Length: 152
Image (cartoon, rainbow, N blue to C red; front, side, top):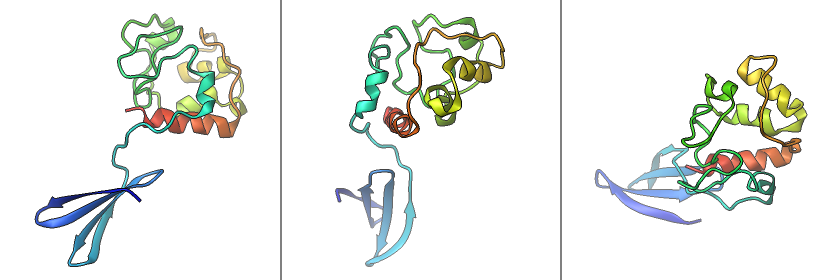
């Protein structure tokens, strides 16, 4: 397992990069004295399921928008705020964050259609979207969301 050794207040600190989280172990005279998880990581390898997204969305920091807005940093971003992208009124007036749960609602076909998801997110029974996507299977949606979470 790869690790980085740094010193913190005269104690060696080992940072281990794991697949889902980063574990920090503070070592004091050979004994583990604490752990902290969920440190930021670099983007992982793009899964093949992203082929559903990349024809219409860019995924690199600072890249131009395509048919849809750039997805870099989408998780945690307020809806309708990517500079230079022409959003529908519902998205521009959106008062929600793109959380993992909200994106799952949008892309996972187990929750229904894309139009139903947009109506639920916006609270507008007539809301529409320009996005043309028929939904991903649950396992594929989770791989897409895992990857999107890594884009920070």
